[in-house]
Length: 131
Image (cartoon, rainbow, N blue to C red; front, side, top):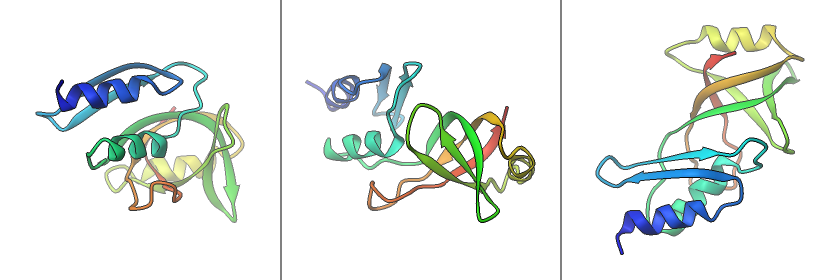
């Protein structure tokens, strides 16, 4: 049994996971989630870590409502109790400004999340693009 297989099987056992592709050569796991899932990125990071690997930057697509916390935009993730702080992407700072203008609207955000040492600590979503 290969290490890739162990990670693949562990990720597929998570409720809400539709498909998993793991490439140890690329150091990449691609996880597609089912519509309506309640899986959080930190849950997946913790699982990867428990299987002996170090989670890295994670590219995500998340839907939810833009809300404000003291003037800072946050995303209330659809179907969950999770709220993600939003931060600007240095490559596309305009997306952050657009988020501020769309407070109160339902949006889809593509961006990056970086794991903290404590997988249960809040992690912001760096906005690359918004629809």
